[in-house]
View (cartoon, rainbow, N blue to C red):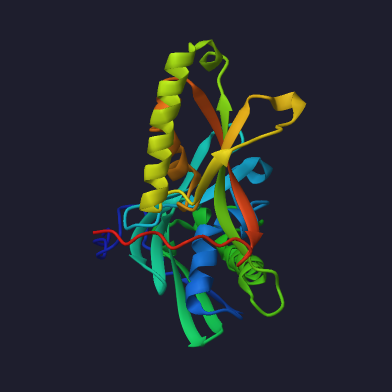
Length: 285
């Protein structure tokens, strides 16, 4: 007689009970800075070789900071590879996300516990392995051997070591992450007549001043004496919006860009913490 499947089992596949992977690291930093470094600067410290889909093609890793937000990597050619989606978002204590880098979808929780004014324990719990077959558990991941041989456990230990080195305040140089935009004249834009150019520029200027007044943009200004090889550069802007995509959206809404006078490039800029200061943004009503 064929036994009736227990709850949580499917015909032909027995639910596998596998303990979660847990790893932790101590970081000599307050919990707020530790959480912020993990989330906002993940593209700078995460060891994309070998722990990513694109490896050395990866140029940015983004965590959309809200419940339901995506976590994904962006390659140099614009390709986007999803890592998962945020299920729980509770800064600076923890976040939980789905994890698509396993043969079947699993779940990852990162928690940040303050042990003192300048000491934080960061813990990762990677769970959901019972959904996989024995074959899936043995499949290679970024490291050979898969779950069955401890590869995921070793991988998370290495990732947390990289993170601790980036976030540790004990003698390490701390970096802050900004987004830097270079504004360029388009070839088409150079054909505008003087009246049209002046009108569009004033609309662009009003839009930029509005971004700065709201705190969406930190600084902006024209560029003089650009290199002879790149005379199209005409201005720059500095942002701290949390992701390149958010800044691209702001720039795409700029009247100067929408009307074809300007185009832009956006990149992440890292600088020692405290090296750049700006007036506080005005309080919003």
